[in-house]
Length: 409
Image 1 (cartoon, rainbow, N blue to C red):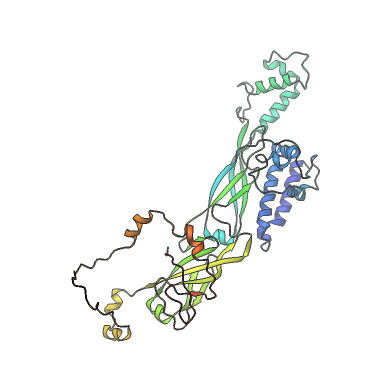
Image 2: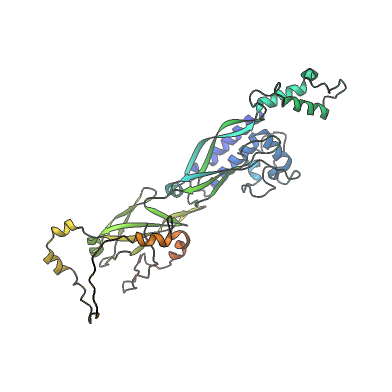
């Protein structure tokens, strides 16, 4: 079995053992799985494997900084029992070495993906060192027929290991007559690869998932990294702010006055969230309730969750309902209308009633795409009130505290 086959076999065994789907109770399983994939990428390619053997992780990162937080021990754990003719021990093996450029790829994820976690497998295309060119080069170096390729300055006294011989072969490789037919002298070819990343529960927006050594290959330098930058898509029902979630729920006028006990919202994992309002509590538009422990999982500690803030909006009856109701009986049930000002103003102008939209006023003030909760949501809802119901008008005898102001989506 070749070295490459042994590396692949060891990686597959460990990947199955440490896959996040098989270790749901281990918060570090996702990170360890990514490190194993990165270690395999480094050791499966001859150039990056040689760089690691000579320089350690400094050989496959930019001067030892800015790369993934990989521990050298991951190599020993994965492949330390195999004999490849190079050492997996920690510590530098030489001077620092440059590497190829990183490939940064934005990756769209849903809020459900970040709440539940997800394994993503994808087909990618990258530049790899042309293997046929390498074989052709080695044949030219090993052959004594180099003098017949038109390189007249190689004399019979040229030694097999002479640097002049190497230079001449390199010149020959770049001439149209002897150029590799596969890469056409480019030295690299495109190759399809299959990558796997694990989106951990609670990962924040713009989080970076790094596949070390999985970037494009170049002759003479280790490959760079492939970096996936998570970009959260807008959700129809929820808005995220750190470990907290915000949602707006509509209730009827009857529910606002008489109370409710029903499923208010379907959560990101498919669960229905049933909430009962306190008996005798009159709900006003804009009242906010907090459901603790129903927010986003905390990254690296997914058993702990933030809070879900639900803003209640009251849907008033429409004109059709009013046409069919006994208005006199309704007037007896409802609170009385507000009286006229006493004393009235000296001048009273009557103006026309015209319906409008507050969005027409807010748009010029905040501009398109303005997100009110981007900057201040965390501070707004960092409340420590022992009650789950919050009344934003007053703190009454039922113990409902003050509510931070917020705007619905």
